[in-house]
Image (cartoon, rainbow, N blue to C red; front, side):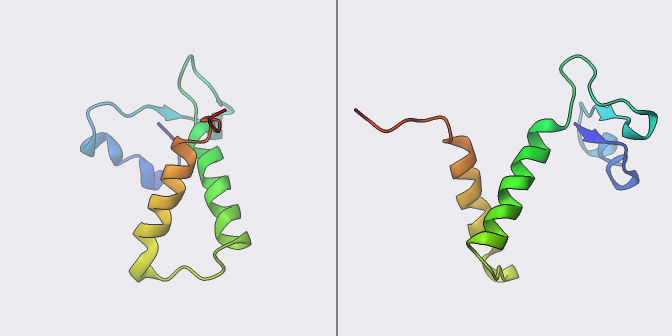
Length: 81
């Protein structure tokens, strides 16, 4: 799922199922189709990069992304009691 930014429209050619939310037409949700989840993920990634990792070089970018993927995917797990 993406918004209607021009660069994303080509994703229809790469993926079998690609839904578009048309923000330019004031559409923000259609049933279960929305971009809120990815926008939330990117906001966490951006805050982490600015607040914790002040410089992220291209050589290690995949490692930083991997760490934030792990953090995001395990965000609801509580400590053992």
